[in-house]
Length: 86
Image (tube, rainbow, N blue to C red):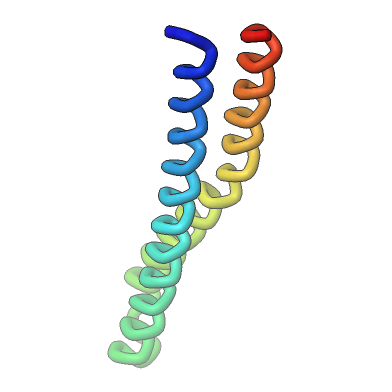
């Protein structure tokens, strides 16, 4: 595989990471909205269920927070491939 092909695939991977991050952010928002609906529907007697949803919201947030570092690694790899390709 040529350097150009590797770079093209890494650039496509970077785009996919952007898409995944957007979907994760949307999923986190949906889960937060579900939590609000559950808490409202059960009027305070939903502690365990709300806690589970809170855990899901937190987990999604942690995953989303890793996206910038992952994208940076892809960018650095592209830079390395470019340097090797020259």
